[in-house]
Image 1: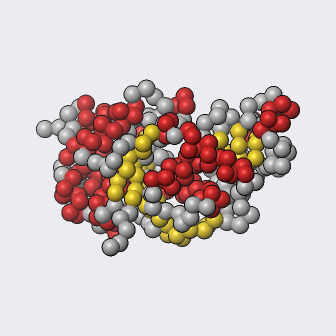
Image 2: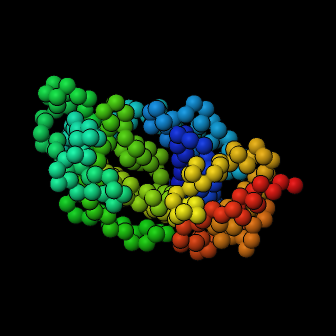
Image 3: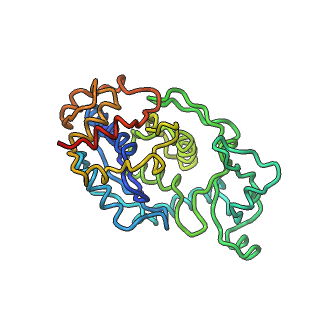
Length: 318
């Protein structure tokens, strides 16, 4: 009997669920239903001040309103500090992580620092090999200490199931990256790797803005001896007419906005299904119909543009 795959829906309660997020979650869920995967739910609530009170409950409610379901209990990253600390200790013991006292300004002003593709300064390794321990760094500088992981000299290569072959030079895409922040909380990359490994996640579906994150996470899994890495499906994002990622600047695209104005979940599902190439026009659809029509080959390979016609369709409540 073949092994049952496992995927996860992983919303972050730093803001409301908008149409772009919902499309990615829907594709993840539909693909899981077609492949017979388990679907887990993980709330990624580690982002300190950016986590909004009540946002997690609202996200879960809205996903359930669309009809998405999951297996087993909900996992919250804020409750898994011990697991993240254990993973950090393994990295430190292996000599793969080192303490860092650099501020963001230090990194931005470092002479000759290469720059990542997104324009942010890459970390030039100023603290690499500088301190024998976090206590030494703290005593010498009087600053809070973060932990970084050394990136490999060679690019990280992997085959994405949707985006195709990838070759990511992490040295040029941010350099040595933080795995534990100077506030004592695990950073996104380490938390995701620890959580996926603990839950047996072997299939990850998300936006293609996280392709570099995938390379970082593959590198971390290798350092931690957690291979093989999961299979990945990175999907093009939903963008506004200006080509930028869907956000407040494009108007109110929150599910909450349309739900309050009386839109039924079938109307939202119909638009998302149209964006996924599963429907030939904007119309109401049930989740069951989208399951029957789902075909990964029909998903567009380019970004989806949120248009005034899309907004008008959702606002047209009978």
